Image 1 (cartoon, each protein chain N blue to C red):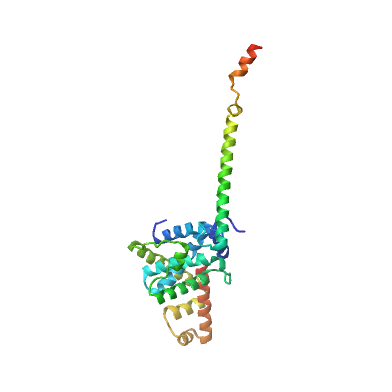
Image 2 (spheres, chains in turn green, red):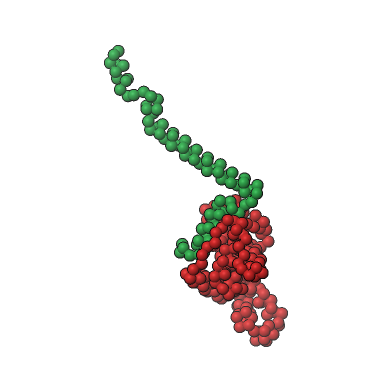
Length: 77
Length: 189
């Protein structure tokens, strides 16, 4: 992009359309709700994916048992 | 089959429907496709690069607001856009200043136009004129000769008919067909 007037106009129109600025009334509200719901869903899914990754990487710490205790119990027997 | 990632291959009808659905890339593809056509039309009527650029912004803002009402009566939305441009220009002439209602409704700010941008207007139009010349060259020979004689040389139909050895009616038809072909070629790119 050369950054001239027509490039700036392109960027401005694109941003406004992405934000549903061209819609009015009920349609605009419905569209904005749908966009917000979609973004929330993406955030939730990403959060869950990160949590699952963390749990799968550290299963022992997640269950609360430490690796050394099993050896001590075996020695007592 | 429509390739979802390449908006430039979509029809105007598809792009405008996507714009109603807030598709940013469709908005950019539609704008880029028709920018030169709209700008050239406005510059031809105003003779002023700065006003033409400002009016172009208003035309596309109005088009975005009207996207949901577009009816595909023609393969290209070019005529529809020129209709919007005609209204915008008319309103502006009556008010004595460039209309900005559509931009206000969209919440768009006003973009400053500097000397570089005015130069850019002329560059775009020069490139378009070359493109038009290329399209004229590709017209069927009889239509090309008739269009050049009538539009470029500004000769009378009777005179052209005499030079080409045919009737005035035939010349009018060739000019009409040639111009219609050019309009279609330039609007659908």
